[in-house]
Image 1 (cartoon, rainbow, N blue to C red):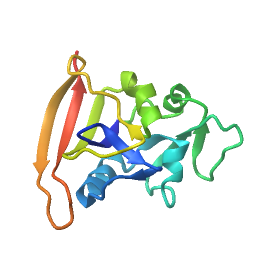
Image 2 (cartoon, rainbow, N blue to C red; image 1 turned 90 degrees about the vertical axis):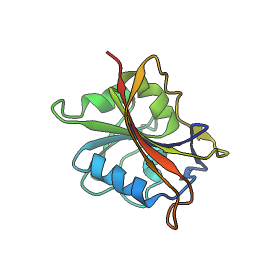
Image 3 (cartoon, rainbow, N blue to C red; image 1 turned 45 degrees about the vertical axis):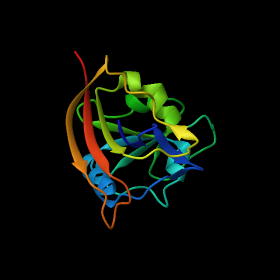
Image 4 (cartoon, rainbow, N blue to C red; image 1 turned 180 degrees about the horizontal axis):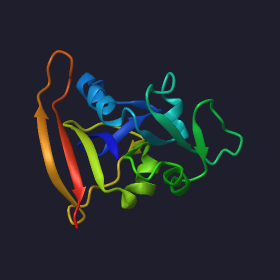
Length: 158
C-alpha cells in the first residue's frame, strides 16, 4: 500500500487531496512506475487522466463502468488476482479500498503529513502489534511544502 496520511489519518475531502507535496508525488511516481496500481473508482476519477507507465486496476460496484486501457473489477480480491504474482503491486486508495485490503498488505509506504485536517476519507489505523516501522525520513516544510512530513515504510511483523 502507498498513501499520504495526515496525523489524524485524514486522506482527502470532496475527492481531492488536502495538501500539495511535490516530493511526495515524486516518491509515489518512483515507487509505483512500471507496476499495477489498484484503486477505487472515485480515486481513479480524481486523476485528470490515467497515470503514465502503470497498469490501472479499478475496483467498483458499478457494473457498467469501463475505461480504455484500465482493468475494471468488482472487488479487491479480483483486483489482486488480475495482477502478475511475480511483481509488486500497489494499492493506492481510497479510504474504503485501504480498509478492505490492509490485512492483505505486506508493506505500507506512508508519507505522514505532520498536520491534522478535516476530511471525509481516512486511512485505517496502523496497528503497532501488526506493523513494524522499518524506515523513516523526515522532511521539513519549505517554500514548496507547507507542512513537515515523513516518509515511512512499515513492514508486517512475522
